[in-house]
Length: 306
Ligand code: 3PG
Image 1 (cartoon, rainbow, N blue to C red):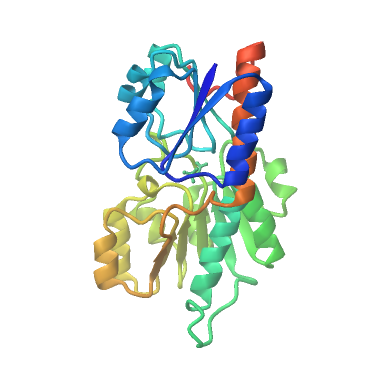
Image 2: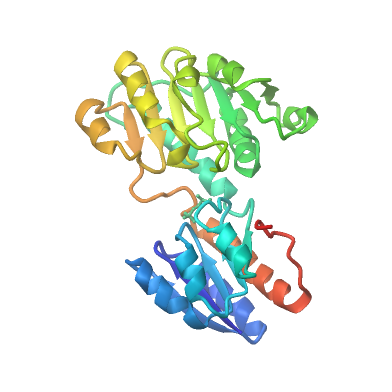
């Protein structure tokens, strides 16, 4: 059995070592393709592997086609919008994710962005505090729950909207429930996005929602850039000089931001949300264990394709 770890953005060495320990203990071979630059490198590397571990790397139909022996691909992370699930299913490849394993790292980044912005990038002038500000968590999954705990620690007034989570599971975090997205966006000066990217959520954050946000609005996006209707965001930025956008992945229209809205946005260099040693370690360990368990017992608990 051969496992390939293919990452354009490499995991911390301590995390790769955990994959090595788990796969070696199972008697499997391990190959590494780290910091590769082109999808052709991935296409070459998958030709003889039985299992594949990736991050946000694009696992396209072309990759799946080239991986003649592949039986399982694990996205070491939460969002699997980078994997062509239909191609996996068509080739009898099981696709899995490792939900929750990197959630606290992503939640911490949301607050790093908010604090940096609230203090004006530590520019020596008076900034603002997070305490007592209204904070809306759009989707209350693993990351949303970590975000709630941190926000409560900061003394924020915390709300969420998530139609898939029952009220009592939200209230035990000391978070108030909103019945609609409109209610959440109207109430909250800060909004943090934590939903997956899919056909329903793509470009779902648009003008009608954003315009409802109170004065000095801050939209925080450590999820996916495609959730945002970028034309709507630009329209809001034109209309409201009090609006800020903080994101882990820069929008496609970054040049407009750089040209016109200096000081009102913050974009990380290279999708930093899950980039901690701990998050890498947990996600890698879970990936390796899920692969071994799948081959040894058939356990497909974290399967995401039909
Ligand atoms: C996820 O979906 O788990 C995060 O977006 C992390 O992505 P990354 O592994 O590419 O940093």
